[in-house]
Amino acid sequence: QSALTQPASVSGFPGQSITISCTGTSNDVGGYNFVSWYQQHPGKAPKLMICDVTNRPSGVSNRFSGSKSGNTASLTISGLQAEDEADYYCLSYTSYITYVFGTGTKVTVL
Amino acid sequence: EVQLVQSGAEVKKPGESLKISCKGSGYTFTNYWIGWVRQMPGKGLEWMGLIYPGDSDTRYSPSFQGQVTISADKSISTAYLQWTSLKVSDAAVYYCARPDRGNYDYWGQGTLVTVSS
Image 1: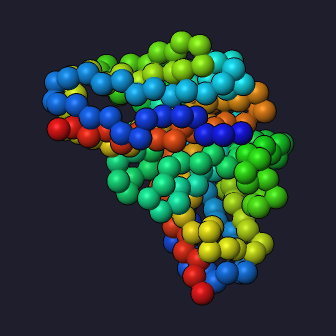
Image 2: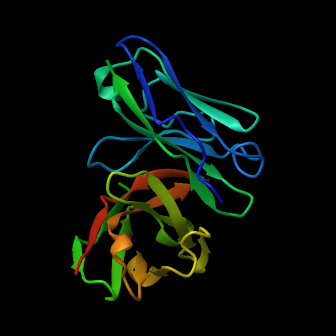
């Protein structure tokens, strides 16, 4: 059961949009609409940003959005802000009745 | 207010045993799964396993099956993660988190485990 694949780093200028991909298989990302995304600042616990592929929990900025196509889920951050600089992880339910995280993506605001 | 409060940092030697805890409050502890996540120094998040305190149903990632034991004591709303013989490679921050239909919406503050001879 391998980690889901994410780009190691993504960067953008303030105000721009960036997209982070999360690629799995039909046994995880492609097979279920149970993909969530987490933001983690250094030394802090992760924070849920997107649930069930596309939904934003209460309190999360509408600049964050999620989608899925086949075995790849994506997180888009629009109107990039300095506070968005952090590590981002996807998480998916799997057919083995377990969960698996992505490899993680470091977002840098230039 | 939902809270998950974890036990404090630990410093152990290789071969020693350890049990860390995660106490839930502000919700019905037996109605939600509790999961554990490892983060090794400078590395990403790894899903370890989870337990349903209501009936102690437990699931493990294949990577952690047999390496750790997840348990819970519903009488005190506390979940546990334990090792019988620590390795240097077990050094990490361990988080507990509560999934709601697979979305981990509440997290503990993390427990730092240091393993060194």
